[in-house]
Amino acid sequence: MVEVWREKVMLSVTYLDKTLLFSTVSLICIGFLMVSSASLHLGLARMDSLFYYPSRQLLHITIGLIVASIIYSLPMHLWETYGTQLFFIGIVLLVLVLIPGIGIKVNGSTRWLALPGFRFQVSEAVKFSVVIYMAGFITRHSEIVTNSAYGLIRPVCFLATAASLLLMEPDMGSAVVIMVIAMGMMFLGGAKLKQFAVLLGLTAALGVLAIVLSEYRQRRMNSFLHPWEDPFGDSFQIVQAFIAFGRGEWLGVGLGAGVQKLFYLPEAHTDFLFSVLGEELGFVGVLSVILLFTVIVWRAFVIGVMAEELGQRFSAFIAYGLGIWFAFQSFVNIGVNMGVLPTKGLTLPFMSYGGGSMIIMCSAIALLYRINREVQEIKQGKEREVHYG
Image (cartoon, rainbow, N blue to C red; front, side):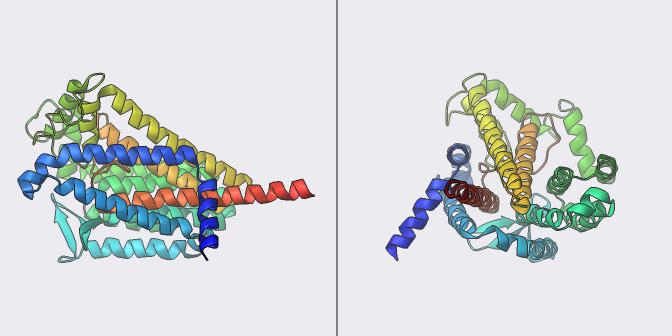
């Protein structure tokens, strides 16, 4: 029994993508350091405990790694079999979070469910399920996706339901993320450019309409376009983020020595963690984190291409979807922090404080590791067949 377990462990280590592993571990470690730096004063002020937030984030990481190990152990055919059911479970959770008394309201948004020890942001689980659902749909209906407009309309109807529920929370950022993931995957799946352009235009129009019909979103857009008109009101966050990056210069003021996190920069340990990193680690730290995210996205697409070449289309589109997700969400969070995008409540993957986000991100990267393992096993099997004739 021990020998079998040891053999499985050694096999798992052999098939791990070392570059991907290094980048992921680096982001989690840097994120933990920055969360600790950004939250010590908050823990003391809110909970009378200096290490309240760092200790909880360490717990989030530990739970995330445990869940990731379970995800890694599950073969891909199980995800293909139950992907649709998983997506509809996500829809049910989105409905539950909107029911008074079940969903938790924070800063005017109802996005969380209470779990023992932490709050769980449902939208993160929905993004995970959307990747799996879309990969399954594209794999099963590849001819419809490439040859018929119905191939685009059918999944979009389900995704529009999820997006509508997210807008009711309200969480426009997550709604945009799931639509970008879906459209990106359908484009890679062979959707005709003309149909894709129409869908993209329709989605953009609905996004503009969502902004026009919401005074709250209009104020956010105005604060993005004219941040210095109201630096102590709607534009307070972004102006403080500008100051943080300005103070950071090339090498930063030093880890733990930042000032903007001290009740100037709201949500410094969550949505605006990147601004704290910019102040304390400077341009070098900012560039390092961006490069690490770039490596993760690059490896996701490399793994996806290898899987597609070996005929593993479902696994390939999972890898593509995860790459699009990591790329877009990190781009939006970084863009918001640097003032090139309107403010959105999206976390920085693998880094921002939060139990639900960390667990889902660890699960997503574990799924990518699993795809790589199965791809390497198939490649090795084919090489043996060729070698032994």
